[in-house]
Length: 88
Image (tube, rainbow, N blue to C red; front, side, top):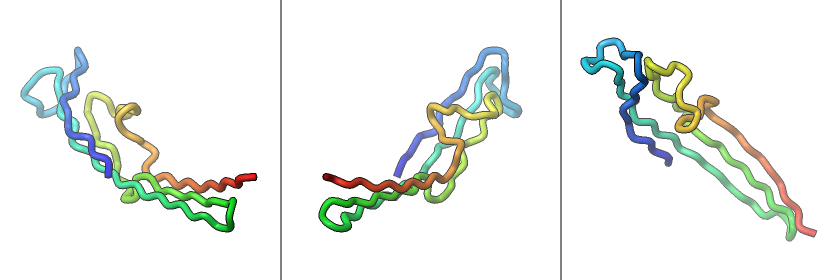
């Protein structure tokens, strides 16, 4: 489980609608859950799989930054990954 607490967003010259404090807004907390598995099939073959953001949680909307902060949130939503490795 991944948790990012809510935080204050401040961008000079912009305000959030309904916010009593000029130039500030509160981004809500964000929680995602990831799953992964690995299976060794035969002696040298390993299969791996993962699902990031299983519940497809959406990043919080922040009025001053409608695209969201790509450093804190993943706008892609749910991601699947499969891989295999073989040792010689």
